[in-house]
Length: 114
Length: 113
Image (cartoon, rainbow over all chains, first blue to last red; front, side, top):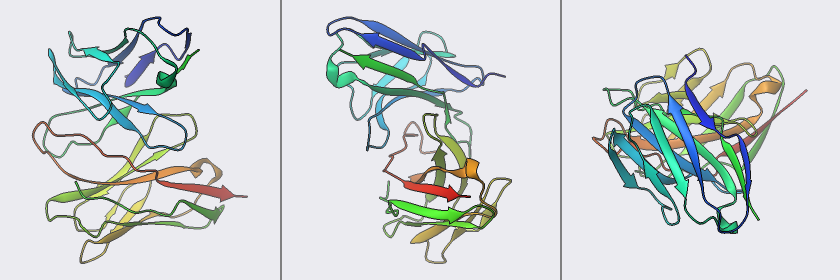
């Protein structure tokens, strides 16, 4: 049981390049989330999904797109990277059952945009 | 979800109990208190949560005041590996599709040898 995994772990992009971050969970969780974390700030929610085929905007969605084609995967895309998107990105998931609001996090992806 | 207030940083001696306070004076009756921690460069990790009764698990104890306006996370015998940022979050449990957590800056706990 790997839990939540993220690919890649590190990435350096040039301004204007695109990339996709992959999050995978093997816990059969309905809910999945993408956060970003910047120095001196708490985690901020980018987008989230309450089930396969559904996505919704979080606090800071601009410049990002997401897709949830399979229940176990949640993809975060940057179409045209900007230096302001330099950050650590965390994926999380949790079950939809009663009393199961605990979120499980991946190890993070460290992205630098030059 | 109610806001929380935590001290920016705390120190604790290794082997001693670490008591991390959290103020949530505007908490509603159906809001739970959750605690997570984030060890440097890792993803956050769930510790414990509670509604109004004190809770204990293998990691920590959670003490919630009777009026529920504040709580304390207790690490009974802190080790160097407990050095981390600790987040106190208040939210409504099982709130339909609204399962989002609002993260503050947390308390940076340094456990010293």
